[in-house]
Image 1 (cartoon, rainbow, N blue to C red):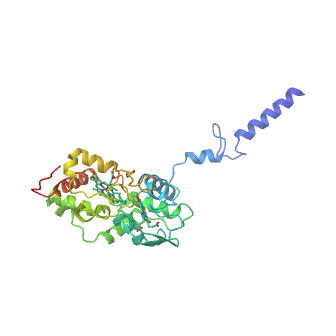
Image 2 (image 1 turned 90 degrees about the vertical axis):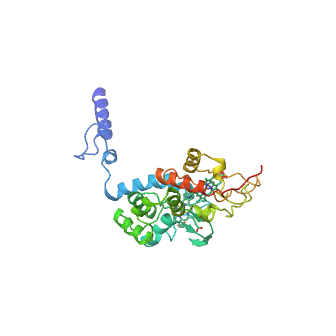
Image 3 (image 1 turned 60 degrees about the vertical axis):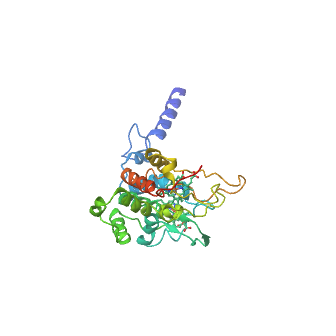
Length: 278
Ligand code: HEC
Ligand code: HEC
């Protein structure tokens, strides 16, 4: 009797753990439908969202937060933002060409600047990021395809010189275009001449000018610095707030040829024939 009961109990327990309740799709070693679903290839929108989340977290999340809630004094929220729900061309314009406040986001005013952080992403990657932010954190807007994004980019970029025209330019001229394309002047001033306020930054509460970088860096060092950026800006008053503008990490945004051209452009900014007294 006892042995029979123990066997019945063990059989019932095994059935409960492994059978998936008579579902014909489930057999050893799998024990339930959730486990099987995890092995299915993701397709369509699900794959787009998974890719968008990964790119978002490496490129946008540092400012807007992986929870999409933004950061006080640094970046507004994307969760519940009316900008994210706009038509595609208006939304795509923000990561492609940057944004300068003052703006209202969900009833709150922000007055900061965002560089064109998406300008170096491929159509496929940026479409995935936008699809992700339009559907994460309670947002609900239509997905964006690679073709939609290609059309939006064409509508926005209008009169940029063609690739053929750019190939004929000097690296300094091309570097100037790249400097504009990524919105470097938003923080470093027109032609890198400075003058842009950065509250509580040690450098005269301004983002530094770039016209003397030739004195501080060789080309490899300059390229390395631009790639890694600088998140921690020294504060004028150590007890004061974090300066709102920091040097973004451009590694996954600006491609190596552009980086080389940008460096040549920055080196060309040093005023000629000037004697410096130290
Ligand atoms: C270096 C910080 C930074 C990064 C990185 C960044 N943003 Fe922003 N973003 C900002 C700031 C600051 C603003 C507000 C600008 C203003 O005040 O005009 C903003 C505004 C926005 C807005 C409109 C306002 C809102 O909250 O809805 C959208 C949409 C947006 N960003 C999307 C993106 C996307 C997509 C990426 C990645 C491709 C990205 N941002 C990367 C700082 C950043
Ligand atoms: C959102 C603002 C912002 C944007 C956009 C920005 N920078 Fe910066 N950058 C800074 C800040 C702030 C510093 C100062 C970093 C520090 O204190 O170490 C800096 C420092 C630098 C330096 C070092 C200057 C020195 O004297 O050592 C270089 C070079 C530079 N940036 C190049 C660029 C280039 C090229 C771009 C465009 C691809 C760019 N920056 C875009 C904010 C920005």
